[in-house]
Structures are given as structure tokens and as C-alpha cells.
Length: 318
Length: 282
Image (tube, rainbow over all chains, first blue to last red; front, side):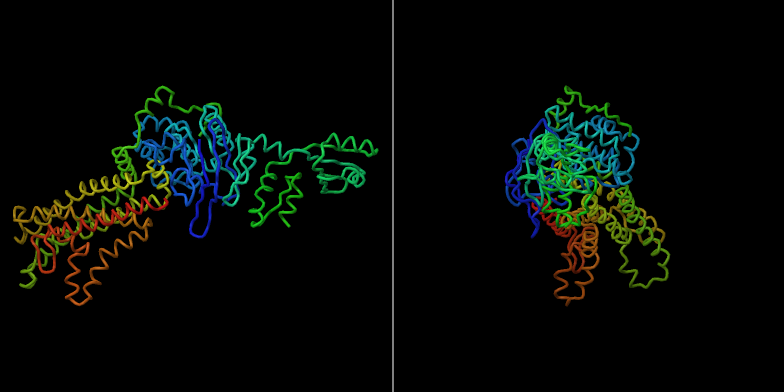
């Protein structure tokens, strides 16, 4: 359990995190989602006491991280920024960390095998690929068999096999009742890994919501319709709370009506339908909508693989 | 790297895992072992320590050999002021450079690579890390510096005996001066480490260290001698070098006072580093 209360961090003039209040519960994989620079890494640094909060507090299991006699058994941490001396071997890196707690060498070797670094364990970490570096970081995080895992962008640099591996690992850790808190700037990644979402933008909490609820909330009533009488169809289905947009002639994207209602209405008016496809709003689009305020400050590049979010993209790009 | 998704094994079978969990916790001794592992597992530390020994011994040999070869043509005044002890320990002045650079790197290397984040999450109380680094480095520096100083002394005197201008180890004050040379080397390493911990940047750390040790003393000598003479002996470099002399000369401290003053500098640097380590974000 991680509990943040009014957590605030300012670096000089710049506020990195402002008034964050959230709980990360055991037994779940909680995704910490936000655009790059939104304060995810800062929050994680605050949790383990690398940085001191300017205001508010954060505890792990009811205590400040630094107050634990054996912190590596409480929290396993993988920071996005590399946290390994480039001149030291993977084995000696893990050994040095283990020795602070009196964790035996056998555990170090066990973890090297677990993350698949046996063949390169004696090589200097500076020669590692990004993926190998991530595996080393994950080994360090698991060293103390911790109750809480905090992972900053763990997928970065991993190959598809590695991504699959880490997803399964995290789910299994959560199933054992541990607290798993991982950050990402990719909604698509969270959708397949997380049970719960904490979404931030510009250092502020935007949503604290279960993944299923979030999906329900954002995936309703988006229907792609193709009709030779699209213009007429548009007129008859329009109403309050209903938005209709079009990407090409003869095609409509309807928000706010079920496929059944659209089909029935078309039948009532004798309009032909060639396609009637209920679609879920892509979570990526929902995420972009939620964090738009920040995104607007960036050079937005609309993608064409998010049809349901197309009108959102237009607004962002405008 | 072929860890299949189905082969996830978290290791630590629950019984054994919990057993070791119950026993393990952060201790100063554990952090000390960790810092020892960190030191020996880096190639740069091994090279720096080797360089310290080679320079301490090598430059003493060069200095004494040069004197022996020139002795016949040296003026009577030069002969009268020749100091066989300091000639054989001349290399210490170069050894401090290598040991000082390593002292800075022990700390700043962690900041430049990001290792410090791993270190401080494992030991979030932070200070045990500084104490362990200080202890490990002091021990390692002594283990290198004591034999290096003795070898430099005996090799130098053996060379000087060619002209019968050597000084005997049994001569009053000589054992203390040779040990003082080793102590000076060690304290220089710790002083540099303190500077590295304060500045957290390799370039700044080495520049500051070199500035204090090698640039400030000649600058002070520019001042009017009345002022310079009252500052000069208390500079870290001069106070430290007083440790490897016999008795004291004009405008230098006695070996004991030199040790006390230089140790004061070292303690001040490390104490400042300790305060900053606790207060600053990592």
C-alpha cells in the first residue's frame, strides 16, 4: 500500500508535482499514467525518499520509506533513469546492493538467472543494451523479495518477449498480494497490464479509476456507420448529447448512440446501411483527451490509427 | 536471454525466502561490505591505487638516483641542505594526485552514472553510506600507502648509500615521518572524497581538489610574507606535508600539529558532506 497525501514537489520555480493524493492498493497492478514530463518519475522518487517533498507526505505500508530497517524488503524500485555504475558488472552491482542488507550471494545468482542475464553477468553494465539494462534493473528491484514494486517505464527497451515476460511477472506479483505500481506514457500498455489507473498531467491528479470502469466510461456509444444516404441518416439521428462526424463521404462516426438505436432509426426512415460497427474508443484517445491540456503545448501529430478519436485529434491539432 | 513467459520463477522459495528476510536488514557492517565490493569491482579504482604506489615509489627512486649522480658536481650549500628523507619521499607529492582523484571519483562516479539512486534507495538513511565509504577508503589507502612509503624510503636510502648520504631508519623521527607520509596520503584521499561528496561532480571535484592542493599554496606566497607566513603552514597541503618531516622548520608545523590541522580539514570536509547529503535531494 502506497499512500500519497497532498504530495507536492517544487524545484525552484518549477512545480513538478502538485497536491497529489492517491492510494496504490495491494493485490493489483496499478498503472501510473501521464505524458512525458507530467511528474511520474518525480512522484516515484518522492515515494522512496530520493527527493524530499516540498509539501504533503507519502508512505509505504504506513511508514516513510526511510524508516524501514530493511527497505529493499519493502520496496523494489526500477527507475527510468539508469541507476547502475557503467564500469561495474551486473553481478557486482547486485552483490553490492544485497550486501547492504545482508542478503546472501545465492539470492544474487538466483536473480541473475531469473532475469536471464547469466551469460553477461560478469560484463560491465555500461556495455549492456537498453533491454539488458532493464532486466538488471528488474533484478535489483526483486532482490529483497519486496512487498511493493515501483517500476518507472519498465517496458522501455524490452523486446516483445521481454515485454510479455514482465507483464506476466507483474500480474503474478500482484496475484500474490503485492502492490505493483508501474508508470507508463502509453495507455495501450496499461490497458493490457494494469487493473487500476492513476492518471496525472502536469503534476496534478486527473483520474484515479479502475481500468474496467475507465474502459466502460470511454468506450460507450461509438459507432462507425456506412450508408449511401449518409447525409440523410445524419439528420435523423442527430440530437442532444449526440455527436456525428465524418471522415469520408458515405461514412459517419456516431458518438452517443448505440448501434441498435442507429439501425432501428435507419430502418424507420427506410435508409440503407452498408456498415454498422460499434467500436470502443481507443483508450489511447481517451488518455489524450484527458491529458489534452498538456498535450496542447506540444507539437501534436495526429495519428490515423485512432478513428474514433479523430475529432479529438482535430481539436488537438488545431 | 531466453526467459520464456511460462518459466517465471521468482526464486526465494517461501520458507527460505522468509527466513532470510527475517534476518536481513541494513547494518553499518553490511554497508561497509557493500562499499568494499563497489571499490574493488571497478577497474578505475584498481588502476588509481596502482598508480599511487608506482608514483610514490618511482618518483622517490628517480629523485634519489638523480641526486646520487649529480652529487659530485653539487655546491657545498646544496649538499648542506640536502635532505635524504624528503628526497626518498618526494613521490608522495605525486601519489596524492592519484589517490585524490580516486577519492573524488568514489563519490562523483555514483552521481554521473546514476548509481547513487540505487545506493540511496538501498540505504535511505544515507549517512551509513558516507561512513562506509570513508572507512573503506581509509583502510584501502592505508594498505597501499604504508608499504609504498616504506618501499620508497628504503629504496631511496639504498640508492643514496652509493654516496653515503643516506639516513638510517633508526634515526630519531624517521619512522614517524615514513608513517606520516602514509598518513598524509590517506588523509588526502579522504579530503578529496569529502570534496567530491560536497560537489557531486567529477570535473568540479578534481579541479577543486587540485586547486586547494597545488594552486592555493603558490598563490598564498604572493601575499606579503607577514600574512603568508601565518596562513601558509595551515593550508591542507602544507599541514599534511609537515607530517612527513622530522621536527619542524621555519614556517612549518611540527609533524603532530600538521596531522592535527590536516585531519581538521578532512573532518570539516566530510562533516560538510554529511550535512549536505542528508539535506539535499539525491
